[in-house]
Image 1: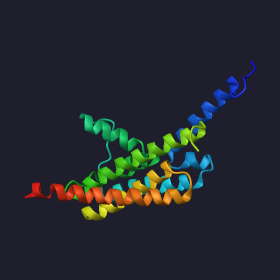
Image 2: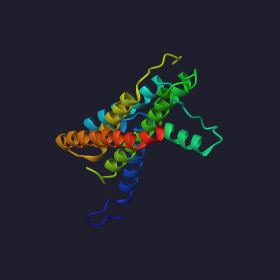
Image 3: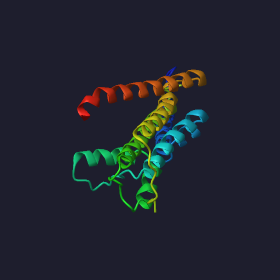
Length: 137
Length: 63
């Protein structure tokens, strides 16, 4: 099928969609990797530093890393937010055996830092996906 | 394994949080490096100003 002027052929659209999905997946698994694959070096570094900094500080503050088995809605939302940080969530689940420190305010801050890391990374995933789709500069 | 914990004051944690989130916002929001730095600084200052402002508004409730 011939493509009309200004549009991609069907196979090109499918390839672009698959490529965008791959970029989004890479950006989720390792913060900044999606931008790195798109050769957006500054954005890749910025998203990696922000997401990694938040996740590692949150873990050092002994914040809560939510699991998928939470019974309350806030725990479920916390799990979704934490999961957004990709590899840092899985590393935290493996190495965090001492549990959250609720005896200090630092532990509470840590929980927020870890969740914010996931949200920031999801922002990076959306940004990388938009660039891969050609919707963003 | 991560039993050694870090302790930050509320203000220190807020400043560090604001700094990292401002960097991410600037990366997502702006295109060139100059506007990105300006945007990050502006976000950072707004985070601090709003955070301290809300703290002052909540101060009477703590007594």
